[in-house]
Image 1 (cartoon, rainbow, N blue to C red):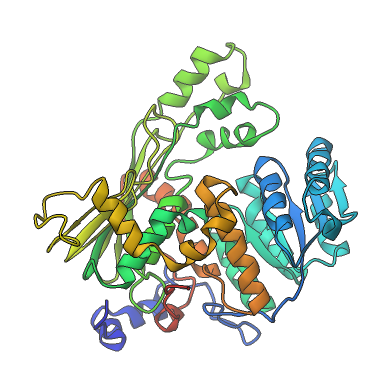
Image 2 (image 1 turned 180 degrees about the vertical axis):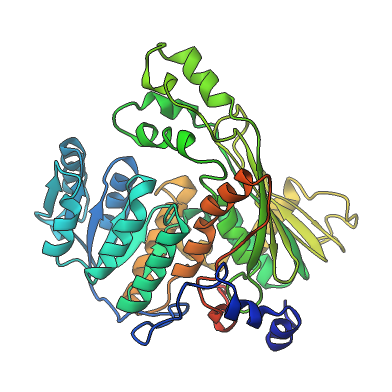
Length: 460
């Protein structure tokens, strides 16, 4: 919001008092003298980036291809539970055009704690973590304690306790901890960000975000693969287990946690848990382990977030229903609205002569014209380089930007506090669902410093 007065806002919303008094919004203790706020942190430049990876299954092997294909990188170590994943990863490295840059990486496998040994023995600059959700938090914490930057697959951690420890460790050791939210680098999401920053939607006041993706097929991954551990989550939790793909972009459109506004409260409700149990009963033998689970988590979760400025965000999650894939990706302002999947738009005064009717969605030729005029400059610069990297090129663009920021000594596109706030929905939604939709306060992982954090702006 362009004419936003932060001091007046803090006074009128009693935000400063909330920071001082509420244990729900504040850490259990103040930032200690050996900690430093990391909102706009820029690490010393790295000319050559030495990379270690923990977890090299499907996602981790993809990161080997992406990180390993760019110049000025060296993969120095790989850790995984399974020797087969190590062998596949080494084969991928051997087939890279840049394979000579990654000669003889150290390998660690066969024991669930070998990654700890790798952190101690390996002179890596960054560690890429692509393991099961339950291990993300502790691996990120230990990575930073071993003087390395952590780059973590989503979510950053499952519990608010771990998220606070991640923040405190990052601030103490002055190390990046970035949750690798690749959807922030999608073409549509970047174009929407560009339009928001140019003010073409006016004052933003509502967003919608989702991860709706039928992943029941993963239940066939019984011993190894994402489904082998992801399915177990349906017995342990209630709420939104995977909130960040939709919420990350909408949060950046609204400039949350950066000068303008921040998360305040949420309420959350889940449907009955029916689909996973039905799928297990119909597709696996009666004595199969999937038929022995007590499925607790509802098939669809709907959450409504309220920010301190009173803006709203609806967040949905459903990995069980036979529904078309969508992230919703909607952002609404006083002058117009953008919606994703497929890309649609409406503006109060029309766009480039295609329509004067605010009720009419721009489609076909109009959307092509919108992209042509407002494609994000970063997308224009990097698309040809990254287009074959996965998920429409967003994976490669994310990795390119990580490498670029580290080599230039610039702040990353996503800071540790954003990753923590977006991931905190896992526990917050669970608490709300278990208490019949009772409102839950967001922790303020920045301890009030978000008001002075630079806007994530348009990167050329």
